[in-house]
Image (cartoon, one colour):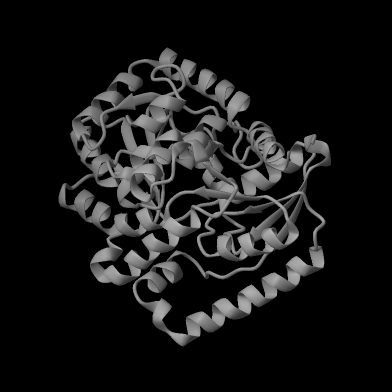
Amino acid sequence: MKASSLRVCYFGTYRAEYSRNRILIEGLRRNGVQVIECHERLWDGIEDRVETVQGGWKRPGFWWRVATVYARLLRRYWQIGGAYDVLVVGYPGQLDVFLARLLTWLQRKPLVWDIFMSIYLIALERGLDAKSRLGVDLLRRLEWLACRLPDQLIIDTSAYAVWFEQTHGIPTTRFHLVPTGADDRLFYPTPPSGHKAEQFTILYYGSFIPNHGVLTIVEAAGLLADNLTIHFELIGDGPERAMAVALAQAKGLTNVTFVGWLEGDALRQRIADADICLGVFGTTPQSLMTVQNKIYECLAMGKPVLTGEGPAVAQTLTHRLHLYLCERQNPAALAQAIRTLRAAPALRQELSRQGRMFFCQEFCLKSLGARMATLLEQTVR
């Protein structure tokens, strides 16, 4: 079946606003695939999911919400009927897969799940097992079973597929790769606004979670405090922001500025104004097994990217060609990498050019959609 005639039902309580789902849906459409969204919102945000794992799942109100949301989802599905070739469960879909499997069995249609990331692993890295061991153990069992239901599993890196095999016993051959990429409708080369030439800006933006290694960034800023031309800008919010602010204050750093959440044009302009964009420097499994959105987004904008070494990034991108790598959780290595790039404008320019070119070839909406469409076509045959 050709992509132009493929009809996909994108199903579940997935995060409709999350970049992964937006990218795959739009990417499929750009390749001529008809995508029918069958979606209902279950979660109110990250804190809602965290509270549920910590014990909210025991409350009758939670299960009433689940029942009403899935009743609405079923109504939407029956309106669609069997007018699709393959059903795709979006991220996260650990609960959705069970209903989706039943429906596809009834319709005799294939089921694909874009598992993308393990919410069990995310719960572990947030330390939720210390607060609710039973809740996290149930989440592990739920995910173990959910992984066995679809006809095809989609994930972003082979390193993550190995983790699933080691943790849940799912053979790596069950997984097919579609990289994370970035939404090139939102991230594209943008002229700088004209900040002072003598200031060299190092930019981090994100959710300040442990796998980003923000404390390492602040420590590196301390090692570079004697260079008055280098300034760090940290944008966003999250679990480790307060610690990062406290560390910068304790060191008396004047070369670090913290900015709250920015989106859209405001964030894009800050990226455009930066001289170097930072990726992640933590050493958690999640950090090592993925190539984070911000890396692809900055490549899409044609910016030089500096991030920590790891198996996933090394398999995907090349050091000193597409981006610059340094040792993780090592402030001295990060500071030295910044010094190296600061002193090599030609290298920064080449990283910008090659990184942007490679992004356009492999990780833009059109390319990712083509990969996904090919995998779905193979499932339908």
